[in-house]
Amino acid sequence: MRKRMGHAAGISLVETLIAMIILAVALMALAVVPLVTTRLISTNVLRQRAVLAALSELEKYEASPSLFPASFADLVHPAGMSFDMPTSVDQMVTVTVKWRGSQGKWGQISLSRRIAQGY
Image 1 (cartoon, rainbow, N blue to C red):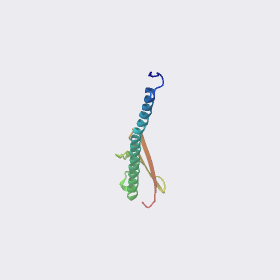
Image 2 (cartoon, rainbow, N blue to C red; image 1 turned 180 degrees about the vertical axis):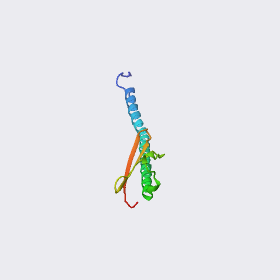
Image 3 (tube, rainbow, N blue to C red; image 1 turned 30 degrees about the horizontal axis):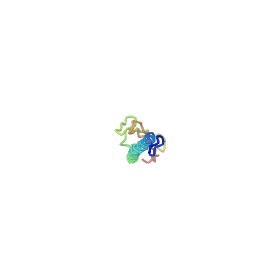
Image 4 (tube, one colour; image 1 turned 90 degrees about the vertical axis):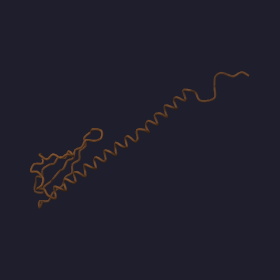
């Protein structure tokens, strides 16, 4: 018997290469998911810390404003916080926290509270 050349049963080399490329792209996409998730979680953790630090400073100011410097421009905080002086009869105090994120980008959050005149 003579074998016919031409159509062979099975998978060709081109089909195998295409399947491997598709599989490689899918696996690379799955490998990126943990990296992106970790980055998002660390960004949220830094933002939560900034909010807690700002709330803490507002509470400290409300408890005893006399302990804070006369000029908030002179206040240097290690967490990168900056303060605005209260100005008006109902004193509005604003705390702005700036931080450097995991990718080197700066984040910023501002919290304000109206302090009653009796303080």
